[in-house]
Image 1: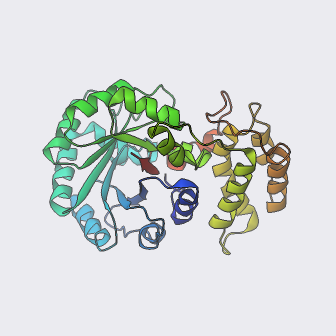
Image 2: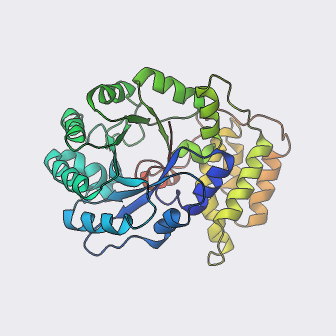
Length: 339
């Protein structure tokens, strides 16, 4: 997830139960671009024990090839092409989800990337831009260029995150392409992941926003996939996670208030499982200092520490719109994968 899945966040998630592999935030590729240093760190300094795929967003063949050469010098598991970001400022540049309007350009890009990447080449896409008119055509291009893994978010670009996820269309992709398919979109819990895999025939799921809310979700998926019950998470566990995340993402160069505001981006998702009234979210959003923030956490999470953290988000308790934009959530960049 752009502006979320940095090195610090990967380390925190891995502490609670790592996914099978990670995808970086996307590297923006254009004539003046160079691989962003903080994203490079999430590859070069990753000690989670899990492979990391380098994600690209762009449409200029020359500069995509240049960037691939630079990234292949790093310990990447493979190269990933983003065809899914629904942010208007992205698709208006004809990159990310904007490319779904132009199968011919996708054909050209995938051909160039396949020639440049000797190892694993992966793609994330949505069902289409405004409709699914090009869906089958693009799936055929995935086959043509021997893509190794395809992740499908079951909405169009224009649908953003508002509509129901069309898992039947993901099942269609599973039937049509030769490579494994990961199902993406509203994978809210381990039981939901198992149900989606059963209904689509997908090889696994890709989880974004709900790994911010529940970093234990990958461990719980393994438990459910093995035929067991998911681990019970308590509010005390959540308090530990928030403290761990605060410390891991803190840097000396960021003023305290700015870091508290950054934490609110994460806690907008965490709060969806704390209480059905949204009281934690209400109080958390009004904090300005570390002490104020953790006083709110202690009041809401440690007054009943053994109370269960909701396995699914409470209905009607939602993140504020400015914290659920695609770039801050799971559409522009892939957070992680459980298979």
